[in-house]
Amino acid sequence: MAHSSPSETILHQGTTLRGRLTGEGDTRVYGVIQGEVVLRGTLTVGEGGAVRGGVVEATTIHVEGELTGEVHASHGLVVFPSGTLRGRIHGGTLRVHAGATLACHFDCEFELPEVLWDAPPRH
Image 1 (tube, rainbow, N blue to C red):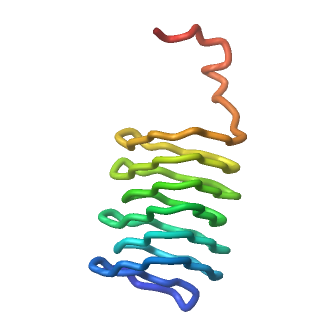
Image 2: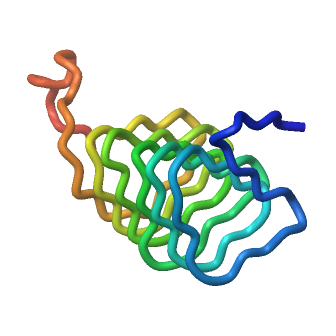
Image 3: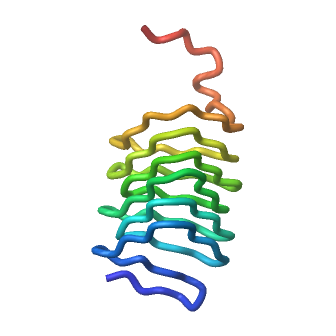
């Protein structure tokens, strides 16, 4: 079971929220959110959790479960091996772990590692 800090909200497994979630501080989702999410803080979609909706905005987003929508992560977005990310993605940085599932259009600013600068295209 996850432990929360005073500025952390947890939506537990078996809970569904329909509508709009806004706030400050960190939020962990192990249940389901169907709708818009606007947070100042870190949004973690935990394994088994899902956020499905329109706009999803947070400072940092960690995806271990399922995230679908128009995603805005101003500082960064991390998709873990168990994570699934779908939609239109905007953000400062993107980190994808091996095994993650992506079906996205990306609008991100990031730099390729030097090893890829002169790499020939892969077929």
